[in-house]
Length: 384
Image (tube, rainbow, N blue to C red; front, side, top):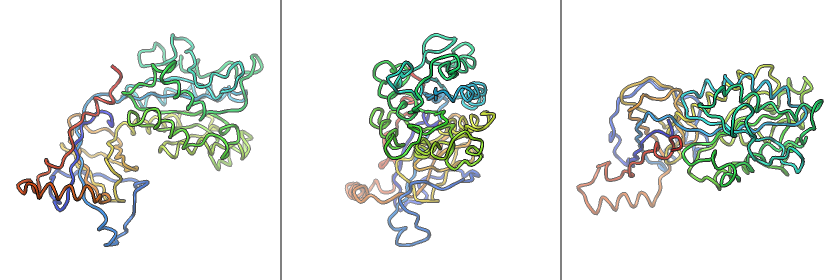
């Protein structure tokens, strides 16, 4: 939904009843992350904030998402690759209402035989290197492509054991203007799913790729054209059960990989699970929810966000940073009104009062303080 809405923003100062929408029974789950300040009832603190309201219109276009799977193709991963491919239906089933496409790269960025350095793997069982809904038998194509013969070292030459999943995703993005350009298009958001039984460069640490490096690369290359979220099936930090099973030692836990997941509000699953169905379903639900969202123009004050829908619908929502995420998408044509408090901007406040002084007839007229209407579906529906 995030990509299929029209929005209109109002500045509300001293006009508490500017918009009167029918309230619905929402339950807010969780806190707003990265908010400027939690006033906790402090009156002087509250004075630093102003009321704001933003309006969105839900369109029916299917939101578009590009999903890059970064597969650890080292010698230890053949079984895990099979488990991923066997249960990909759990993931696809959750995002069936989205307009998705999938590509693959590997963690091998070496100069060896399998060091593809962010290039996409050719599909096994289909032409090209991108799976879409139109790909015949796409579940079996996914399984056959994700299961890497070089990881079965009893029969084949091995790929590099120095896993670089985060660097591989960066290199894949840097090829978006040449060989990978058919995948990274403007009119879709980006999801990266990492599969690895070791951290970046096997042991992670500060001297290798960080989560912030991946996020900064997305911002550098795509700017506001894409939103980005990362997910992973890894040795989750602190997973003693996984450690006890002998899958990984503490230094191999996916701390660096987890950092990009946390920075982008994604989720992780355990690589030690016998069945990846639950983890893939959880990741798919999160990807779908990220599409079912609206983005506020600024960070809200903690616990000040309220949402109204016309027509009324009972839909739970969460607030994460500037995003209001809906558990299920509102009906097509729904008007979504989000009221909240934000930090006062002195320049904006002066401009507001100056505009009133220039024409007193415009006082309390929300239309004179609205942004132009933009159709997000123009920017984020599937590639033409």
